[in-house]
Amino acid sequence: MEISKNTLIKINEEEIGFGKPAYIIAEIGINHNGNIEIAKKLIDAAVNANANAVKFQKRDLESLYKKDVLDNPNIDSQGLEILLDVLKEVEFDKSQYEEIISYCKKSKITFLCTAWDKNSVDFLEEFDISAYKIASADLTNFPLIKYLCEKKKPLIISTGMSTLEEIEKTISFVKSNDGKFILLHSNSTYPSPIELLNLELIPELRNNFDVPVGYSGHETGIIPSVTAVNLGAVLVERHITLDKTMDGLDQSASLEPNEFISLVKFIRESEKARGNSIKKMTRGEILQREVLGKSLLCSKRISEGEVFTENNIEVKGPSKGLSPQFYYKILGKKSTRNINVGDFLQESDL
Image 1 (spheres, rainbow, N blue to C red):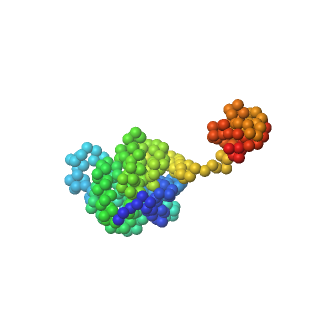
Image 2: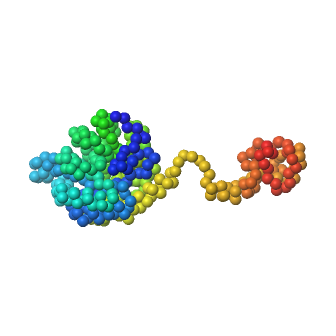
């Protein structure tokens, strides 16, 4: 299935694509620290900021890691023991997800989730969520991607920590499986240095692969995400936290509630400013032009048949006569009428 850059992707009946306001996801992820009340406060913050959706993460650790690694994380790679300890602490059960999703419906915000494995997909399918996120770590996970494509729901695919060749292969694979998707440009460093964001890849990915492209940001500020929208991102995903100093893996690369409010506000103002490619004077400009604009007028009395020269015409305001753009065109022509000092030249004088 071919996906044109003009394709609109629907998530919970909201259209995402060119010509539409950027779809903004508040990525709660695991910033709730396994606390349902913190999760609800983060949902409230996203609603207050006018985000379109909140997103969580669902993992089945036994599906993701080998048993010996789960039993003893120290035997594999440095840092894995910290990751696994945190993930074990923050995982919500079915009743907690039911409560979260119900709270999202009550709050009128879309619930989304990253499914990290097939068991998590099956778990989330019981809630009939409207779209799935595929994490950067699973861009190359074809079995998981195929399984998600079979659910016939829109996919949001992050491209952090991957090569252009891998991205191309995944796009081709998703298309061959009739998947509808939005690609997200991303840098998977937490937090991401601004100078390494390479936002120019957003139009590059869109033009090279003819797919809708968004942005998943992990920088500490707001400006890059607004820039991403100006470069064509149809979706922006940013982590949200109650406090960047809280315990957790992603807190420092997240935005606090007031920052998220500013993010959405600046994106919406940026979209208004972008407007369209039609050059047309506004009413305010027309009024300014009348006051500040310039015209050609007579500096000396000119008789009928007299030649216009640099000695008898000049440029002065306001803009009520012939434009100074015709200054050199009228020089050397004979006047067809008598013109008094200070009178404006008119188009008929040409």
